Length: 138
Image (cartoon, rainbow, N blue to C red; front, side, top):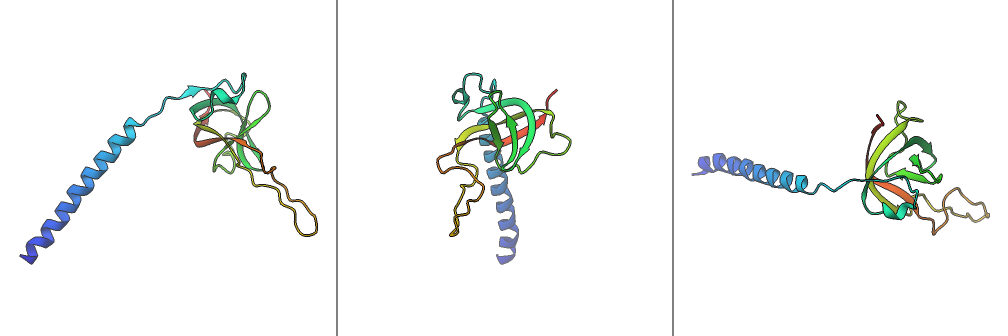
């Protein structure tokens, strides 16, 4: 009986893992969000906030990380992207991600001697693209 269990248990585990993988794959594929093309804030960013947006702009690096620049000059940070790849920097790119407004940059602090560090104000909200996917514009 014990020998049969050594054979049955791995088979049952493989079947269960296969079923779970198939279910997760189908759920993820049905969750695709509609992508809105954002005209880089000709009417302000609010029309694109909390939506998956596609932005075409120039790739630049800032102290806070990789950014694209809106028509009004405001920066849109690519969350968790430290810098643009060398072959994309300074070129026109197409970036798709969830556009949010949040405190992204670290807040400036003052030490005991009164020296102020670099950083944002406490209430500053930055434009951020989450889960950004990017490519050179065609």
